[in-house]
Image 1 (cartoon, rainbow, N blue to C red):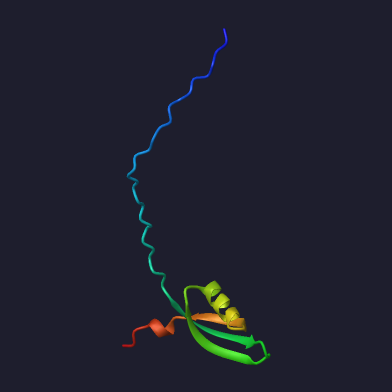
Image 2: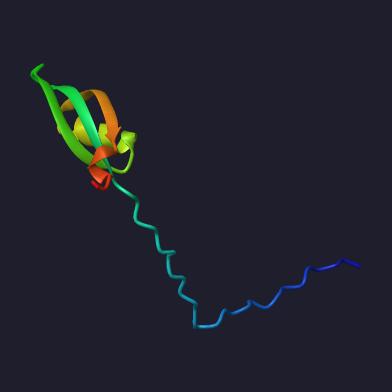
Length: 82
């Protein structure tokens, strides 16, 4: 006797699907950075920029054509004077 495999009936999914809402992302805190760098023409530049972190600052400056040499997170902008 040969055993033949049985075919399973195709299961149909219901027409209503649950929509999954993406989780709300917390807004990242921005820090003020003081930076120094060299632009494409070799001219030294200085400035202050707000960024999420040091890597974000570096990428932003590189997009502007500035090669960052030194940058420091500046906390003095956020202190409350008494």
